[in-house]
Image 1 (spheres, rainbow, N blue to C red):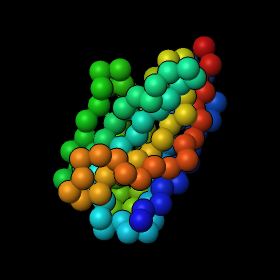
Image 2: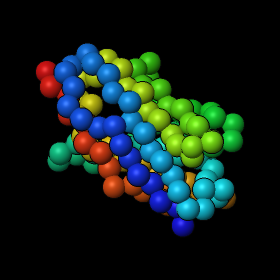
Image 3: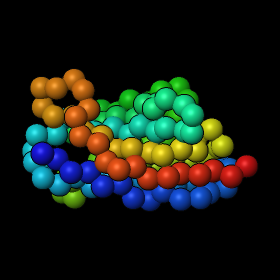
Image 4: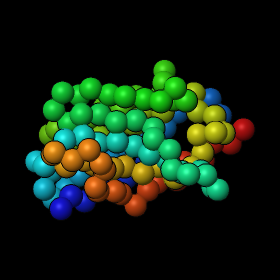
Length: 119
């Protein structure tokens, strides 16, 4: 099992920045990739970013490309999401998730951290 704990959410004005962190514990050697998702009130959960654990390749949807940066720290078993130039559409609960080796889906999820962008 892998446990994930997010931190770093909060209230920020439009145009501001936040950095989220997700600390993994447990059987972290089985992690092949980690990602961030978000869910706004009344909307479906949306993919935000992902990074491969070994090679560090990252992917973003167009909605956040150029504003968000995902990174990982092997020594701390932590993945970060640097969010710049935030706007009201970025508001939501941000979830960290992890894929196990050999799995194409995110099996492990954190509890989420709230991000609120005021306009």
